[in-house]
Length: 244
Image 1 (cartoon, rainbow, N blue to C red):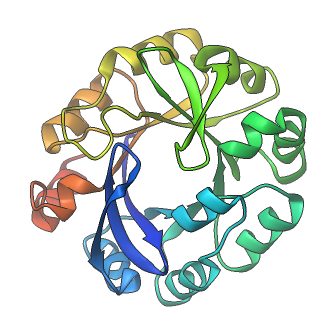
Image 2 (image 1 turned 135 degrees about the horizontal axis):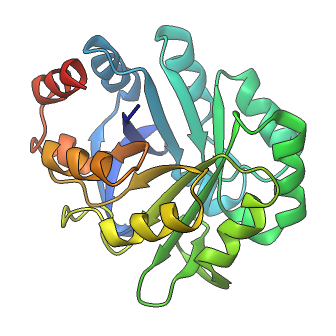
Image 3 (image 1 turned 180 degrees about the horizontal axis):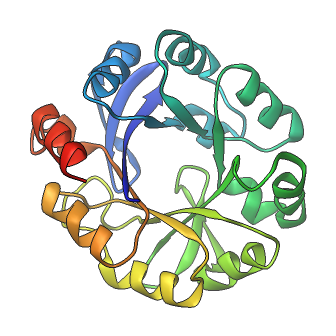
């Protein structure tokens, strides 16, 4: 099964968009993230990727109130991410309504702790975000503001050996610029880690990109800018869901 997952990126409680994760390119799309989430739910989408950019920059989640509102007023399965570092953060995310959490910085900075999260909460609830630029394949964290010396494939393998099931992977050079997803990157990951469910993020321009990702074995695609710029409409999404 292939799933399409809309993303809502939050700064100060507002829905925003960025290019290549650059905070200086911030554009406010809406002051009402809940309304956008309800639009996605209205056409049959089941899951939402909710990104707390304030949390990603500061190292602890900040937009719990938005998570709580969307969880309270929709039936969407919310995957929450951004600054989740401690056991307490994970617990609070679930208490405020997240069904899953996606963790990036803490996995890079505290790999043993992240491995313990997988054991403690279960591999169905804990997702790894491994985001890099293919120029060097080095993991980027803290809302992509910081580059590490960690190799993408070594990073995935460490957690793959510890039971990781769900991976969200972004080619940061393509995020928010609609140049198409990095199919070769995902092919390599799937070939090396065949039991991981890969969610591709970054570069989606239209429905054909969803089809291309599905064809190579990617399990899900996270999208944002293409929808917010009108390149993909709710009607397009509804049609794709009905035909999938």
